[in-house]
Length: 479
Image (cartoon, rainbow, N blue to C red; front, side, top):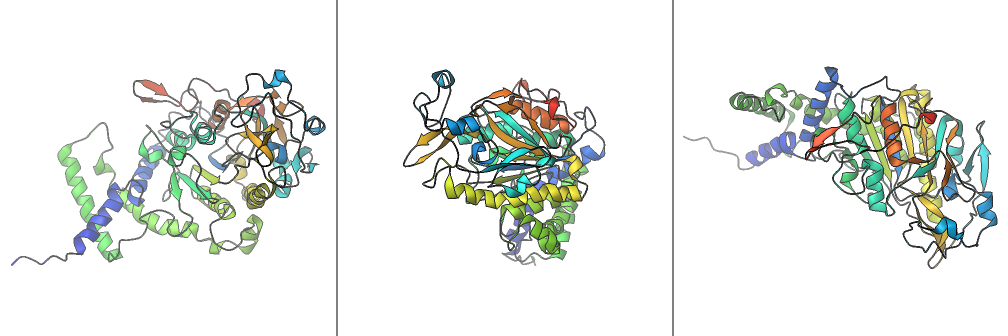
């Protein structure tokens, strides 16, 4: 007599197998990839580590949409005096803008108030009072230059060094070169806040032609942070454990029957992947449970409740790097401000600043208090900046500007209380310390102990690297 099969049991087991073995976005694939990276790291197989790293990990606070440096970090007395005048033809010639005619556009001052702060005397506007309090802990990059004039390609370039799809992200290159120290979490994690995701989506943190194990893993703001984190309905822990053993035995038999394949890892040596998957089921909920954080810490970050927010993501970023994640990237959307009836980007800019100011500063302070800032690199900025020219629509605002914009870094081997570069009297272009995105990437990798010219991967008949054939380490930034 044949045993009767439960018609619901097979789909459940099949779902669990897909979760743990084949899901591109679920727990199994993440666990499998991370296991491979840990193996390489534990064995010391780090051929791209060329010198002692200053930054063992990176937290990148990405302000998606391009905040205006003229309202936040770059007061220009001459620009204020020339407000309403036409840009000199010599400056307008050959310049690219997204929506304005540079030959006819008029210069635009700001209504925001600035003050100098700290011993370094760095100028910061009234919109960022908390970041103003940490200026002596950061390096301002005042002459960053981009290549792409529109948001989607510019975000790709800032993340991958190329303005089109198909190149690995900075986080993926970092993980490929150094591996991960996390035993039960992904090495590269992406956190998002704001009303929408950044233009460009997954390719901004994708692995492209690098191994899938180094792709960024987006954590969701609500529910389980990783898809397929829990067991399928009707599968309890005992059944799951039995399934682990059965699948492990099948994979071992399959690997032995197929022999070794040089183009893929040996499954027989990776059966512990399932143990890692099991650990992630318990470690990830513990990671995102912030109830154990002291109220003083939550207050430091400006957390209000436990809902999705940039403040919550900053605190999660700290917890991730404490647990060994190599690269954590936070995208905060809605910075695409071309103007506002209240002048100088108005209430939308004020709202974005309130959302990120306290938490950004708190992250730096919290890392410092815990002894982590010294070897953690914090990066803050968008994909490009804003013009010193007014863009006239129904109101006057600022257009996209790739000629010069401002970012800042803290910790991880960069100087504290330092300004790298300077722009001209209206903030149109650098007069010293120009730094393009390839230079930025080269410097990030250098701080992580990697020579950007040696970190390569052969694909489609050529050797690729994050900095392509460009990039110079900005040694003046190094502490």
